[in-house]
Length: 178
Image (tube, rainbow, N blue to C red; front, top):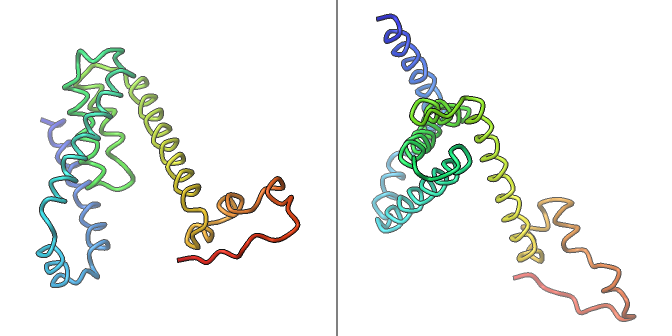
């Protein structure tokens, strides 16, 4: 009855918003060029990307399972909710998949809404820490590259010589960038 109509109306609104954003995202795409690029693409890379996405979903679902449930005995509902969240984030704006994932965890696994939301925040914090660590590693490994030096003060701090390295009286030889 009324609940089903409201669900369909909400779904239509979401699809309409997605259609508007898809229009803006693809309005300047040169479709012939896109077709040529896709025709030249190697299918193995698509398979590899799909496998990596599946691995990522599986690991995130396992992490959610342990954070929310304490053990992996109910893995399937967490995998389903995580996959739903990934999918929704690709078609809905404003990372709506995160909200859908929390609601799906509540419905499929019976996890209280507050617990699921707190787990989502922990998940985002873990992602932020991992991204920060990767940026730090890239900055340290490639600190001499001009692209990294242009990023900002944090990277300039990485490449500036420390006082301990400035103890010799002759300047070090000039380095050239590739």
